[in-house]
Image (cartoon, one colour):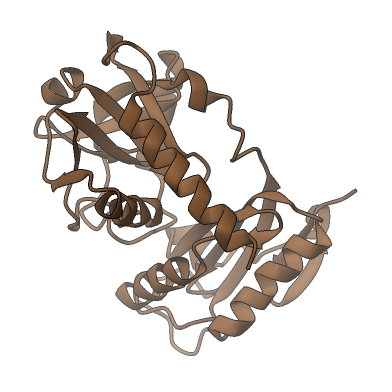
Length: 284
């Protein structure tokens, strides 16, 4: 079955999807995006996703392409049309098409595209084994808190990791870990969960937000602060979170074994708590 995608107000077959070559997202990377997990055919973390989408649009002075309700209706329609039970909906909003010029154009309608992807989120085999991470220089711009479609820095970081047989890259600036190429980064030492505090240096991860809420309820001590590569390699546990991985253990960093080389107890506890939460959300 041909996948159905959404392009500027229309549902079309993916091979028929077309955008203007003058779209500023295509020319300048002038736009934002979101990746929303789908479990049992239901959007997960809906309110947090809408809040972050609103913030990213505001920071770039891009108006909503439609109402929030219409945005959700579009996503639910994609899920239904593609019979998606588990995976993600990717959506992207750009400033729209205009002749190539750097200043914001006037009277331009924002562009919006969206599509679904099927993937295993609940039964990700990497949860049992954990993943290897490679550190790499953080080459990105200074407004990483905006979920911008400018992702070349992350592409280079991820490719660097893949060439070294790792599944994720931890980006490093001034000796400190910022975040993963497509995830939030954490370590655990002496039963304390450590993750970098929010600022313009990192994306405000939705799973990060949820995990910190779950950790508080589970009486897991959390420290929001920077940590170095050396501290990470000496940690008892390391982990990542993202829309597609939920909570996933990191078992080696640059070839250095973390803990006993398997996902640790706090990692497993947080994944279990998060999985319970999203399953409850999917039932309502």
